[in-house]
Image (tube, rainbow, N blue to C red):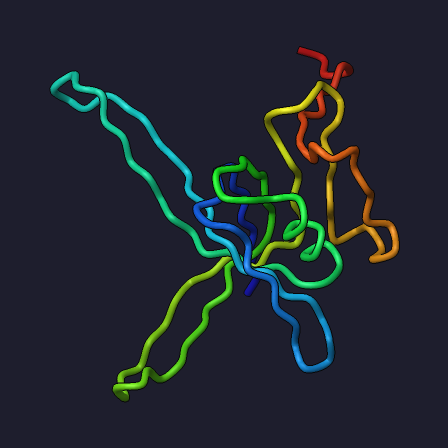
Length: 145
């Protein structure tokens, strides 16, 4: 049986990223992302819905995300859903779906063409250093429509 697990989100950070390290010194950053949906209800009124998503990323790119992002910044992420389960202090079984981020890109703010992509296909030694604003949007001019 085939399966596919891919998540793509564009939203704003709900809190400052929290950086920690595993016992073998791998960087881990946890952050929240909020996405908004607006639509018109059947009665014609404008409706809003916000979805809050917990995200986690590993490695050098996680350190870059922690360094350049803060609460409120827009961020584009690609990753996969991960199911975490544990036993709470009161003995109850707890669980949560989380996005394990594999790629991300800074969006919004800054000048055109200054977007930075930090993907799983880049080696850890190639994390780019930006000019300080760490935000931007890459516009593709060769789109045929």
